[in-house]
Length: 390
Image 1 (cartoon, one colour):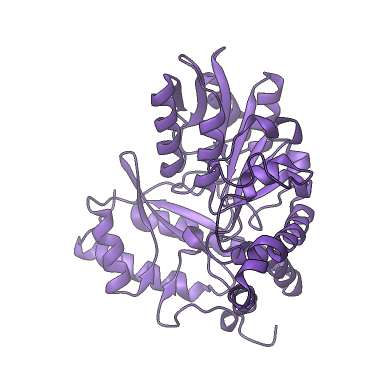
Image 2 (cartoon, rainbow, N blue to C red):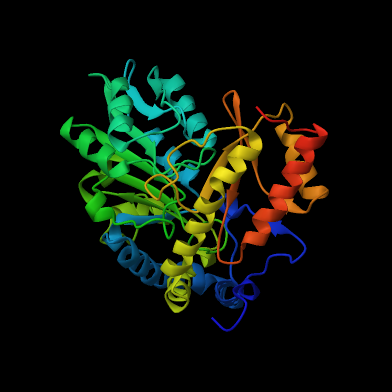
């Protein structure tokens, strides 16, 4: 490319931005498309919300369905994966003694949702312990299903974890869950445009993903996929005009989960533009370069922290994220210090009794950015300030 790809993003130039994984970052062409939809909405809000917006949503879902290889009427837009998890958990009809099988490495907000609904119903949220570092897919699957019992009603698992930044073998997990005759729900918040994702081939019963992360759409743009034969099992989280609709569409699933009151559809409508943007700039090649930069620096950071990587340094378990186990008693203060003193935006995350510093890489990042982080951490370790070697 003859231009600096960083100029396509709106991010502040004075910040070393190593936290794409939390909320993404919207490139200028996609953000301009977002503003175009918002402007149309405000010009004629009634027509946009009640007539035109529904047609626009259909076109957007068709583009996303093609990108994910699934039926367009099997996708409903939601603001975030937590919304999708709550939708499914509330309608799962859990009973006393039922079990939901997951790992001990899931996203905290999803853990909270499942714990809430399990406590209300007397069900059990089984967080099967996964040994770290990961070694092979086969060992992972074997260890995970040690938590399976005759009471297991659903398998819930991340495609890519948040705090530990690990790609799980979800294809193998789904296949084994199917063999055992149990439903499987994949939390793919980090997956779309990060790893190859074919929902038909994966064959999960339920899948949720964020478009506002690695697809780079504006915030509050995610989806819930449910296999057609299961859709009527799950009630809308918000009961509104789509329930027993006066003018129902040919999809009760979409009526229930899409027509849930006044909201701004604009972020959802940018998905075709995001796909066009990624095609225009050969984003698979961009992503491959980013993943290589992640892997090339992983051992260097672990050696600096005196820790071991959580998995083999390969594309089998790693994408555009890497979590470094670090030794700090004050992760929140460390995060603020890195931002305020060094102008580095990076999460420092607790998970159980462990703490991870996670860098995530996208097109605008370079080796220089990781060198800035390395030097900042090195200085703090030398000073024994907020962080020390294991």
